[in-house]
Amino acid sequence: MSEPARLSERLRHIQGHARLPSVVAGVATAGEVTWTGGAGDVPGEPEDTQYRIGSITKTLVAVLVMRARDEGLLGLEDPIGRFVPETAYADATVAELLSHTSGMQSEPVGPWWERSPGVAVPDLLRANDGSGRVAPAGAYFHYSNLGFALLGEAVARLRGARWWELVSAQILEPLGMSRTTYLPVAPHAQGASVVHFTGELQREPHQDTMAMGPAGQAWSTVTDLLRWADFLATGHPDVLSSDTLAEMATTRLPAEGYGLGLRLIEAAGRSLSGHTGSMPGFLASLFVDRSTRDASVLMTNATAGIGTEWVPEMLLGNDEPDPVEPWSPSAPVPPVLAGVPGVWFWGNTAHELRWHRGQVHLWEFGDPGDAFVFDVSGDRMVGVVGYHRGETLHVVRGDDGTVSHLECATFVYTKVPYDPDVAIPGGHP
Image 1 (cartoon, rainbow, N blue to C red):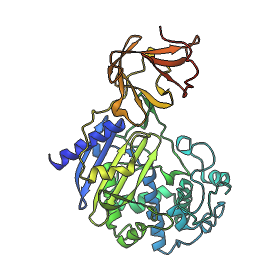
Image 2: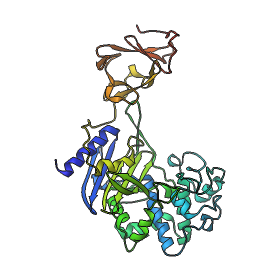
Image 3: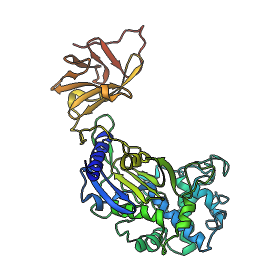
């Protein structure tokens, strides 16, 4: 099998195994793009369709900060209060914010910022009064989205322009990353969340996060991110030097596995730098081997389903995954299953019941390969795979229609672990 065919098969494996509505990816070898692909319902050409990149945005902000450092506008040990005096975290240093060792809380005060309309910088600063601090500065690594909001505001004030204007002028234009934008530009994916137990899709909002934008606002494509990955390996005379990027890609203790705005991982027998990203409806992964310029990029429009730090192992490694059937969203749950998908217990053993590809799948947690599978016909569910083959799964409901328990032969599944000394009420017809 050729290398492009092998990578396409791996991407199909990822899409089917992780239940991703769509996924796009690319690989570069020695700095040259050698493969791009897509799986699932990609709304455009895989290499040119935008997805939200989440915290990969932080790598853009980190480069802005390091540019300012190299120009003598700030120092890594400067307190952020020198640039944003209103913040209650004024004593946190630039280096601590870049390496997530400042001790400040991970998220800003208020509603879930990624799913809520953004707030202006003054409102963000007033709301976060320092009471959310989780540790003394330098005590340990604690990832902070709030910290990168402060870094974005700091460079904005230093340069007299909005942080995204700086990203566009100082980074994207010199590197030719014309498909990396603040808001989505078609063709782009719609953010989605896969309902865990039914496989149906729910749309996720594409909020403008405003003051929190430096933490995860940007949208990009496979082509642009592979260009960005190679920049992180080589530098660019008009953006940032290779020496400064090497400094960024060095562990900044106590942040083991994190440098200055870059994640550092070991995967596929390599030392890689880059970042992962997540926003409602999206996941992303970008990593590069700085010594070889080999890189992997992946983006998907799913809130969960795949460990993004695991992607380089799949795309740059040599393992051969087992074939997986492509995944697509489920049809609506039939009436007989209303209120049934979810967690059920057989004795004290937890099971997961899913509506999956038009069938009922019931398995012990952690072992979907041994699922009991039931076909649904009208109001009857009959086992077709596993120990319950040929048996009928009965949904026992109370007088008000709510589900009491499930019964298949003498196997009774309840919503909470049941007491073996107490009889199960009800019973199937």
